[in-house]
Length: 370
Image (tube, rainbow, N blue to C red):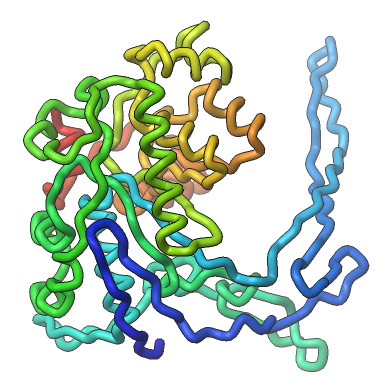
């Protein structure tokens, strides 16, 4: 990957730098179901599945079903901002440092030798997909995954976000203890100029041992309309300041306890909004962020295993035609467990329990241990 120019930084934003990558299509699809215009790629996809019913005598009846979906993809890659909730944590500081290292084309010394910037581990940037077979030779034709459709290059992302800790990202990076000292030295100045926006802290939803980090807060310790409006304002200002086309918000903060599902509180969109207005204690900070994003039509991705998307939140997203998704990044041992469980079950081995420990000893483990 070619080196890239430095992106200038300020107190709550890390600017994107042009990746210089071509937006030209690597391939086109010759099909009556795919239409290309100057602005869009439109396609129809027939999704086939089978609905199964059971008759009175216990026999099953399988009925094929087909649903036609229309997909639309913009050909112009938008200038995109990524706002991280929990920007000063392990995930936030590491991904920010990684993007800076890739933009600047950095290399650094380790005990095993010199390491070069790369996007290994990235599904989009580090993997390939099979496009088809060569019409003449029959050989497989594989392409980079990020060339399948017009996609934003990570180096072009403008990064911002919130954190309940007021550490600048250099100090937060040191606290996380993930990166090599020789890399940290090269990005320390740029990281030290970035300070997250104040975050939401509802003590009842995360472990009590997180209180000593909570020094960068939006006033208030339970849900309210003011919190929703403040998050919306932060998103709008970030978008306007950086002249962005789109903003995506990702929850990468501490895992919250599950919110209790209560009829009349979070079961419908209207009830959820009313519960926020009334300061109900079963509305989690992550749900406040999700609601703010829905109302701003900013996609919201939940990276923690918690029930952020209570029924009322899902209904609100559907009403506003706004995208929400995710219930766990599965970026570490959770992903390993998922792979092992799938392997064991496929082999006919019944799984009864999984026991593990957090060997990194990081703040995620600290939060979950309390």
